[in-house]
Length: 93
Image 1 (cartoon, rainbow, N blue to C red):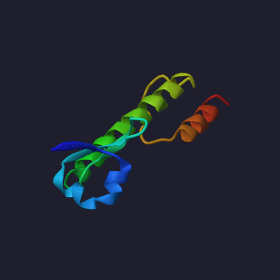
Image 2: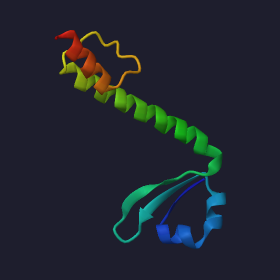
Image 3: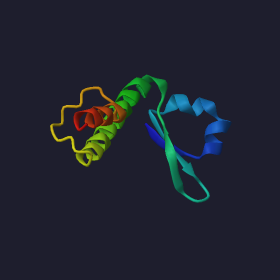
Image 4: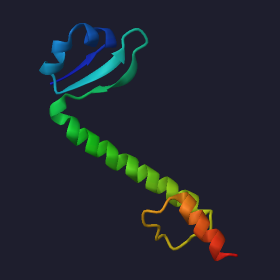
């Protein structure tokens, strides 16, 4: 079951959390979406999903930065941007 609650409703009645699979948090005055509450039975799966999404974003950002730094082979491994820049400096000295 899914429902939408305000932060105030959520803090007043913590038992509501047990009744729903997914709770949307909304500011009732301004009707702005604030976030989502997921119960502990789904927390692991949601955390894994978010971790994968963040890793993809970091990889895309790293690739876009390295595109302009002169590295074109795409084989970065687990190196940080700082390590790659050091290798580039040594390579061109």
